[in-house]
Amino acid sequence: MTAAPLEHVGPWNEEDYFELGQTTDRIELLDGSLIVSPAPSGPHQQVARRLTNALKQAADRVVTMQLYALAGIRWYLLAQVEPVELRLFRLDGRYYVEHAVAAKGEALRLTEPFPAALDTTLLTR
Image 1: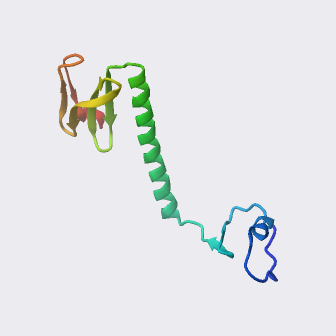
Image 2: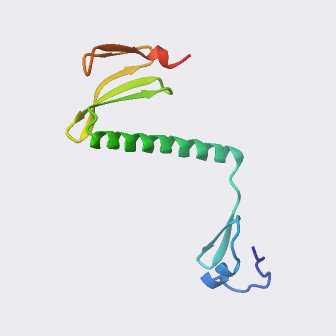
Image 3: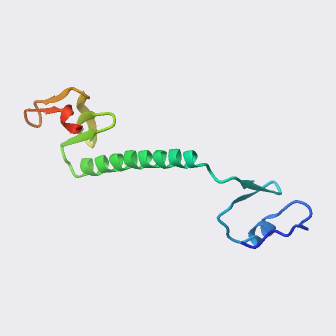
């Protein structure tokens, strides 16, 4: 990054801003002023990473379910570890609808697509 000239007078414009070059610093041009944001703290970065991971998992799950539905797969079992939960979905037309749910300590009891009892305690140590 090229250092900003200390003798810069008056408001910054877009051309002045782009003359600064690329940088990893968080510099923004807002109404003729340069705004330099501090780097995020460690805890902030950890929370941001956890949120990103959670959103990615949720998005992946939705895309996977949509692809399975498009392929005509009649049943979709979602096993979740935190919180412990089993959810069975059945295809209804083009979309899945919830068919059965079991929370921690419960068993998911099925008659369809075949008789079964899935114990949620088996999902954790």
